[in-house]
Image (tube, rainbow, N blue to C red; front, side):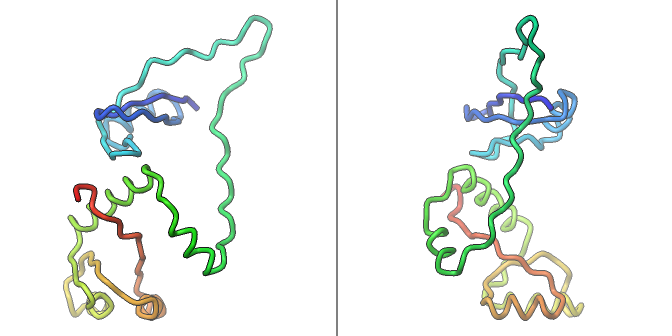
Length: 160
């Protein structure tokens, strides 16, 4: 694994781990290396000091820390309190980008989401991505009918 300090075209600094320098180059060229703050794909590597061991000491290979297991879901009361806390800027930027992609590539059907999802599932309406509003009961009913639905946090637009 190789660790790079990176900077986007807007000046945000972040780091990334890659299998090797070729993996970084391929991902960057394809636009897969993105700034976690603004989503920009104009990313450059920063000057870094090499990890050279002192004479007589073995070089310790630096690897990213293991991901912690996700904690068990908290009770409903705790979940609503946790959701009320501040959202980190990187997460907010990712959610804003997700919203932008959904709005760009899917049709808004408003409160008719559940019914339109059923029509698409039965072949009564054109197959396409849709988004809109649905109650928890409607979403559960759709899942029971074998219709895949997902909820995502709907944050304010990045430009507004």
